[in-house]
Image 1 (cartoon, rainbow, N blue to C red):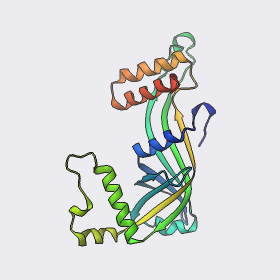
Image 2: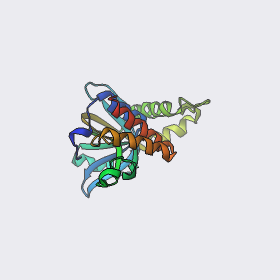
Image 3: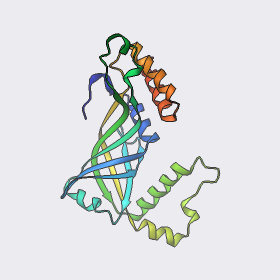
Image 4: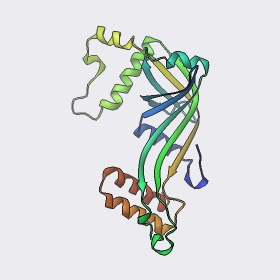
Length: 213
């Protein structure tokens, strides 16, 4: 990933928080047929330090868990908020007209060693943890134990676990940091004027970066 110095996000807490807030990642592996990408939800565990562990699963019918035996290095990409940035929002446009559109975004790249897991106890515990993570805010959360035991046993038998021991985290927060303070303030105003939730989210991120947070 191309990473200019002004866009580097080195705060480990921020990187981990993005993975928790946007857990649907793109798992990229090298297979016998070349590069492959699978889009799956992950659970992030901060242990062991310093980078932690990612855990997920795929259908047993998905060949990725067999193909990765050829190469256990993996990349997982977590995409956060993103937004088109119009040059018309820059005050400098009126002065020089030397401006072009761009795209702001927040992303984390996770590198690590991938391990395939077929242990039924691990898989059951993983499915339960994943369910709790995404059901906990509901008024009546669904639990794995709500389904018939034999049905869950059958379903667990149809998946394979993936665990990635994280060796490196890379974060890119592209939030107009390469523009002047006036232009960045113009970006905030322009995004807020869009009126969409995604634009408001990006506006808050640009404002925070402008204020040094």
